Image (cartoon, rainbow, N blue to C red):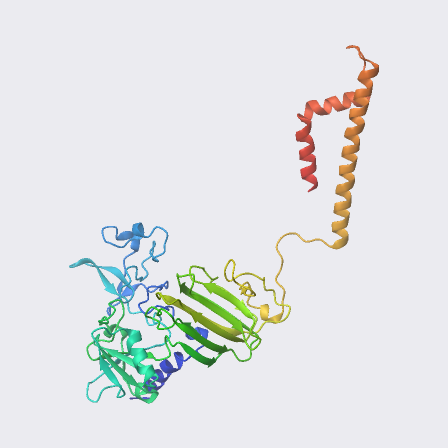
Length: 432
């Protein structure tokens, strides 16, 4: 292996550690890329251009079956995975074969913790640690097998074989195209478990039930991810973000349905509960918590598990004057969580401009004083008008009596302005 290849592999290993930077994060956080919403629009090793989803009405998946866009379909030709296949795909057109579908090879659409697809020449095995085979193999089954035996990496091959190895073993592997790891797992057909002589390699921390991490950024998966978390799961993670006084959390998805399953975010070392999110509740996509040391606890009920969640975090530095609106991660059970409304320069203490017209204290006072005086004059005039009209009619009850100048002016105003109530409302509105 050349120096450049070695550096490339070491880069892959570095990118899946929990201290990865946010720029190294993947566009996908599900094992099969069902959450991909990027703009890749070519399929297969040939790079065939995809057909727009609104031009495939004669096929099963098109914009008509996804009117609300939840599957990611639309008037575009980007690769998507609307049917929970093993990876994103799209329809393509060929003059001989007509319209058919092909997988898209998207390097950025692999969940954090996936190292890559590597060649396995068989003897000796590419990953020489512990190994096993299973007719019910899934990605997490192999990861858990290796993690329990102390290995930091797990490799899956041919849909049913699992191999374990160390960092030096992975550094010696020969990287190949991800499209060559195309074998569905025997235990879960929407996951890929390598290929024929090809290893899908993962970091063994994916889906771990506990951890003590010090990193500027990283990703936190639910227990046993990408499999469903188990009934009765009780896990905790201690996360520090050095050099920061706040932590920004991105909830990429939170598929926890049972209300008795709960995720708690606690400030360390004070023990203050910052947020409590129960199954069935929807956290904000991005929140900022006022701590650089967080304890994350997840507990599931004893009856059944569920799909789980994927959360990325990064440390941020906020000045005491930074504008953070005190809000809720969820509607009712969040205690001190801050909804993320921080501009890029909030860390420098620059207060954001407020919307709407502004006035100084003195100018606002004059406005209110003028309005009050106008209102007082209007009410006084109406009372005087009513008094004089009544008095005039009482003194001169005859039909031919001549009314005073003021009473004639009042009558004229009524005739021109219409209903008096409307005139008064219009006047009051102009003062507001």
